[in-house]
Amino acid sequence: MSLALLPERFLNKIEFEPNSGCWLWIGALTGNGYAKATWERRQRNVHRLVYEMLVGPISSELETDHLCRTRCCVNPSHIEPVSKSTNQRRGLNGILAGPDQHWESRKTHCP
Image (cartoon, rainbow, N blue to C red):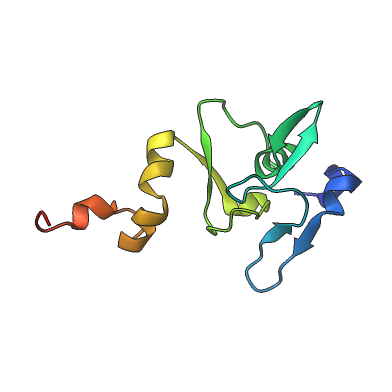
């Protein structure tokens, strides 16, 4: 994975966080905190672009899961392409229960 493959304008907007290994995007963000940039005349999610530039294509049926749980992170080693259902299961509520256990499965009774 060579950073030289990234456009200079992207590199200028990444801060490398040494403790977590996150590549924090200091450019524009979406309303919910994901990195965004204009690429080929349209708005794109930067974490997905960087992954595709450094690792390879992502199927249009897959979503990208931030394993580090930092939405503005664009480090491709912190991104995993997964199905929508897997991404939802692993979401914030799922993390509270554990990586492979959905929060709903922890319920023991109705309120």
